Image (cartoon, rainbow, N blue to C red; front, top):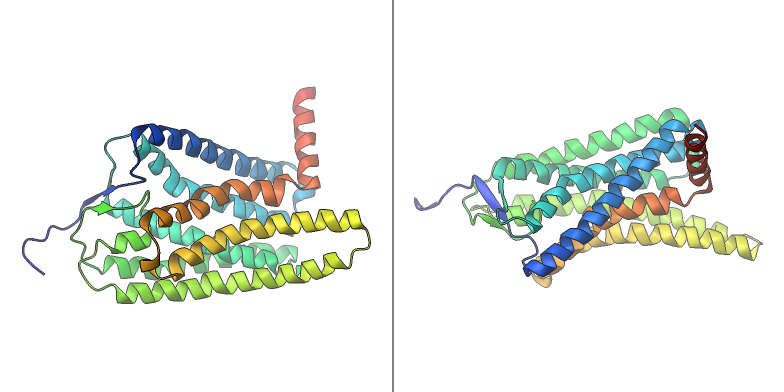
Length: 299
């Protein structure tokens, strides 16, 4: 390495690189989405704590999903919002790397939890729920420690700019002044194990559900079940599809702007949609919400 290289201690997040009027519009739009994300997931967690009728394996896993969605969005969105209305868009390099690690760990946990939730109901025995959830969290964080160690072994010497709105791993690796082939191999391996594998389980589960729906005699019942199933598949498709395209498609085939848009799907849009699709449309959750609101009015 040459003597004129400067080690990175602080980086600038370039963000969306649009004019000021569009930045203000995006700030308002993304602030609304982030507020809905926090509100929707917080409502789910509150209802699950307050209503004992929702203390079932399915709603236990939905509570874990709500925790992940709040954590995942809060890891990247506040900094993105601040950068949209601020001229100073820098972040210290160590916190940036930690955000990269947390982003990967939360995303991996969500993939594994979705796979667990899609498994046959026979495994969803109440006393196994905490074990399966804890295993998903532990495996994800331990696996992503590998990414963290491999990133920290690299020398980073510039440029001092990340062409993204958060510290996304592929964008961070571009700052390294050494060969990142091992990091790339581990990223692809992670995609196969944590994206493709769980997605296969989810699709297999939904194929069985669709087969069961087709056996429903009532046309109205079949239509309602198909509507619910299709909305779930759309959300799953957005989450897994955007991540697979982002991390498994050849990087040369994607513009950086496209990569930023794909990142928005799993960092902001999915955390906002998950409580609506998986929980707030359920009859039991609606009933619990009416019950809680009714109690407050009567006080």
